[in-house]
Every structure is written in C-alpha cells, then in structure tokens.
Length: 113
Image (cartoon, rainbow, N blue to C red; front, side, top):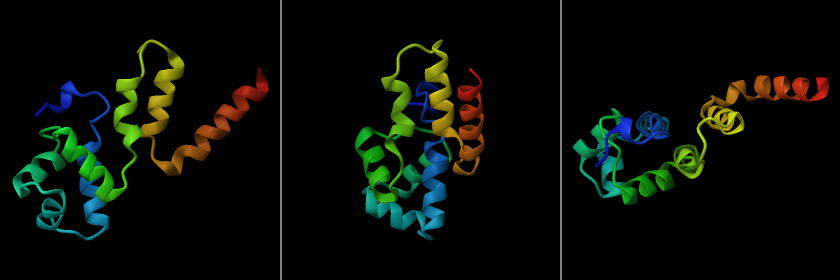
C-alpha cells in the first residue's frame, strides 16, 4: 500500500469515498462488505492514511460512481510545468459550484485576446 504523499492526484480519494458513503447513508461495515475489504482498511482509506490496492480503488470507484479521471489524470499527464495541464488538473479538483465562475473567466479571457 502506498502513502498518500507518494500518489499525486489521490489526495482527495479518501475524503471523496467518505463523503459518498455518508451521502448514501451507508455504514463503514456495509461498504467494507461491498468492497470485500475490512472495516479497518476502509477507515485507513477514508482518513487518507493509505492509498488502497488498485482492485480496491476500482471497487470503490464503481460502488460510489466516483470520477476515475480525477485520480488518474496526473499519472497520465506529463509535464508539470505545462500551464494548460496544471490548470486542467485544478479544474478537475474544483468543486462543481465554482465551475461557472471558472468558465466565465475563461470565456472572458478568450474573447479579449
């Protein structure tokens, strides 16, 4: 199992799992059974102590319909110094309620050339 600091892009994974579990009003025991893992393992995932094994990540993504690209995007992208890639990663992590503001700013920047 990898540590959270060793997996850029996965920082929000545990919190996202926890939020999705709570939103669906599922207990940790119920989710652990659904994902075929121990409750302790789930607690460690939710509290960002560990990054789970890939099959567990896939299970949790499917159970909660989490956006896989949000977590794997940084692995697929190359240059950390490319501003377009940095901005894209930030937009993927941005709460949905702020996306209209970001879109408006981009539209204004494009129109102003």
